Amino acid sequence: MTTTRLSRRGLRATLLAVATACASFAAAAWEPSKPIEFVVPAGTGGGADQMARFIQGVAAKNNLTKQPIVVVNKSGGAGAEGFLDVKGDKGNPHKIIITLSNLFTTPLATGVPFNWRDLTPVQMLALDQFVLWVNEESPHKTAKAYFDAIKAGNPNQFKMGGTGSKQEDQIITVMLEKAAGKKMTYIPFKGGGDVAVQLVGKHIDSTVNNPIEAESHWRAGKLRALCVMDKEKLPYKDKVTATQAWGDLPTCASAGIPVEYVMLRGIFMPPGVTPDQTQYYLDLFAKVRATPEWKDFMNKGAFRQTTLSGQQFFDWLGQNEQMHRTLMKEAGFIAQ
Image (cartoon, one colour):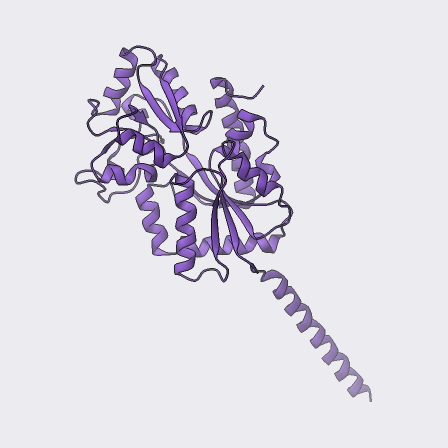
């Protein structure tokens, strides 16, 4: 009898342990049960939109998700529409948002009731560069020649095109103005794709587009890349044009333009999601980054391949929020 009781007790214990393990596994293995809404807080054709749609395509092509990813552009109010939508959808794990610098600039410039801490940080996918561009037929062959022309020209003579008002493109423009000691005419457009087209058409004199927003026009011989606004040269050596690779571009600082700026390409979720739901997307983006398509995309767009999550990402966000607060205060862009 004793042996039988022990055996039964042992069996019950074993079954309980198995059931507990299975329950834990089931909880950890959360997956979306309906389509994933991928919010882009910017217009179509820009860097954030291109990355979101690239991820959508790679996930579908490689069967990385059982549910489809649906990209939705919500650009109203300099991206506030998208951020407030995600903020207000507490606990919804079927929604993610890709971020750019308007994560910081929009609430600072508009006073909209939003802060990045209102969302759930998931991961930094990469950092996007800024390149100083002119039309291929511009008389300014180098960054130094362009900068010297601004310094020697009349105030507001040079037209700089950019995405939005009081956003990263205009912040960089103000940095250029301060370095040159001359005002420029800043003209805002809805998205980076439109900005590049305006430069091709010679409606503006220059832009500070992200590489991927102007790459096709550079490749086609319509635009000229002058310098990259990072502390180091880009590592990409494959030729984009007949004579130049991204790695051939000098840094703007080395050309006498003391401007450095990189932009976040990161993923956030609504507030109130669970750790296992966040982990699903961390695993998903790890699979995306492991594809050869991602490698090609990083090369084409000349991204700085820096990936952060957890506390490191949280700390980086806090530091960059403060950096943008300082830059925008100096530019007079903080909402009163």
